Amino acid sequence: MNISKSRFSLVIALTISAYGFSQQSMKKMEPVNFSLVNITDQFWKPKIDMVATKTLDACIYQTEIKTARIRNFEKVARNQGEKHEGIFYDDSDVFKALEAMAYSLKTHPNPALEKKCDEWIDKIAAAQQPDGYLNTFYTLNEPDKRYTDMSMHEDYNNGHMIEAAVAYYNATGKRKLLDVSIRWADHFDALFGPGKRHWVTGHQELELSLVKLYKTTGDIKYLNLADWLLSER
Image (cartoon, rainbow, N blue to C red; front, side):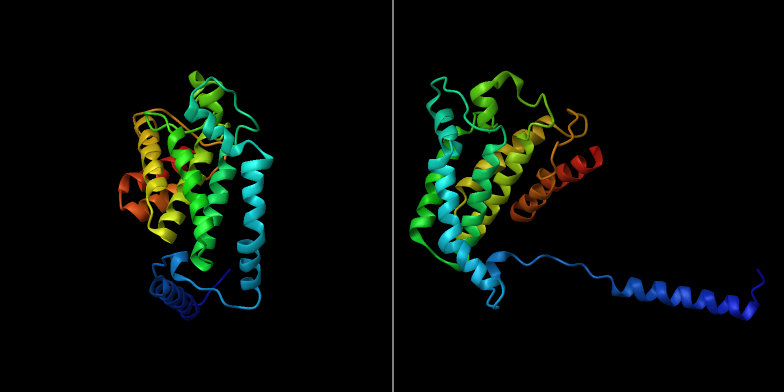
């Protein structure tokens, strides 16, 4: 293909111009904390109101009464040799419900709901092991098999705990669950990373939660650990 010198020059000029424009348009974007946002539109607000007034009641019922999700934490704290009930990843559902409750407290302040969160957080904290480990399935059933199967959601569960802790801290200023999460993250970081044990999470979740923990605490090691986990994958 023959391209005239003038046309070739035009192509180069346009390419340089486009590159320069793209470089100038690049800006650092940061998410806005949910605690600083009020949603008042006619599409989302009714749904948010429904979650606060109906859905969360159903979540609490399923977590406390219908299933053994909260009871598993109580069993760990009692340390009486009781066995885990339910599925190995059930801890995560407690943390997901707590995160939703935290979001709701921002838009719909509710002393009873906040008290319920604090009750659950006390039970979670009581189930944390002295070294920072936290997982009701392994602690109750197979404590000697911790971190032996990457598909068993130990990291996934606690990734959701971290997200719940950050959300509850942002909504209420209370840091008990945040401190539990920091203890677990420090425990995990001491075991896995460059020069330590190899690990690839079976279900991505921990990585993004560690970024949130870094943004909340300012501790760069959590961001570095998230980066390492992504690199390992």
